[in-house]
Image (cartoon, rainbow, N blue to C red; front, side, top):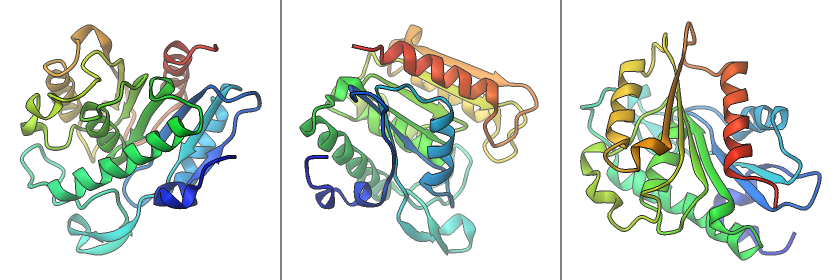
Length: 232
């Protein structure tokens, strides 16, 4: 491994699932509120491709307004989970910069941004969408599970400098999600179609699925990764 991880705080601690062959692509996957990268690293291992490196960073521990200011792993502060809740704009933007630093680090070490897929679940999926849509480097795709678009009222203007107007997005949502209702996911999909090429967005719902993932969803994620990050 070349390059110094210490200059990228999230990478020093991240759980990395290395490829079993020469790594020519990467998936950066962000966990949800209160979680760590370990669970998603296990999920990624179950669908791994031999030439892809999977990076699952841990969010910093911060007080979260939504959970009575308790300190827990969170990419940014959350005040509420409805489309009209106030949002932690500074925290979201800072978190996006920290994810872009991982992308830059991988590029310096031989995996260019256009061979990187950004993904996440719930709050992590929200951050992956925001980061990709405000990123000046072209990425290979976004996997957005059970999530929403942060600072949605600032789009499409917020994406004006982005290189990802044509990015493929796989958005998945359980239709029984009690935390982030599927209607919120559907509204997010409609909003995304005003920012990226609508034909590049796939929105899938899973019957009976709550705020979690399922094998059918993970196989859709694997297919998407294989399609957007073909072997080279």
